[in-house]
Image (cartoon, rainbow, N blue to C red; front, side, top):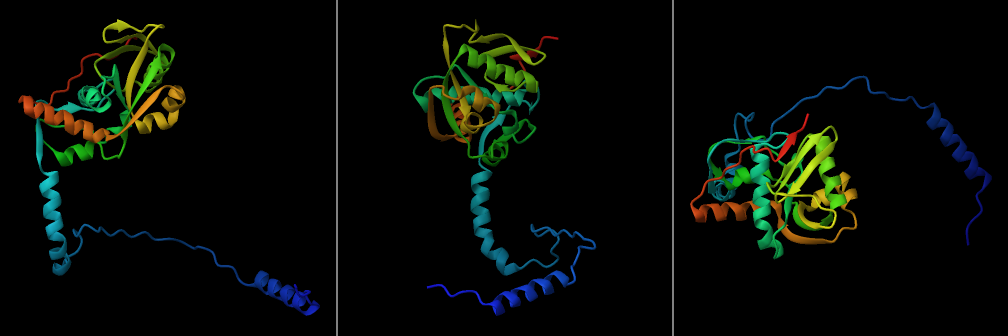
Length: 254
């Protein structure tokens, strides 16, 4: 059973609120920012004990990340409408599609912002550098798109000024519209459906997510980064170097 609130309790509450309302208020008069690096550079006397604990793990990590997986033949740049790095990346995804999904995709597309470094210089390509290029845990997805959706996906890239697409897709940018779309050398056809490989991140949200919503889809737990490792293993086995050059797969009409 609840007790009734007494007049004394109500009076006490009123006094408390009055005191609080009359209490002086504090305001921020200013702020001062200081910065301290935690990588040890600013530490004149690093803790040798802590460093000795970390050292074995650092050595193991370096042994993995410093492993050379391939050789870049010529420097590759990330650029619009379709730079050499863009092209190698997307072609690597496309070549891995059959191993991942049991059937080859017609086109591979990667979001431009997903490439996190601007260039890969000629020379040894390490595992750590691949992690720098693709640090995200994005997985692979295969979607079946009709011609209207293909047009919309290409229009979306045209608005951005280009993208990261495999050589099996070519189109011209005319303002915000993609013109003369060709897949595997054939003009886009209304009676065809096309298998597009994407990172799951791209098709789960944003403009492309809205475009492809409801399209038949197959997801794989394989990371985009692992698809790159597969391609580098293939190249190494074949004694080939990593090559990516601008080739006009996306171009400006005007």
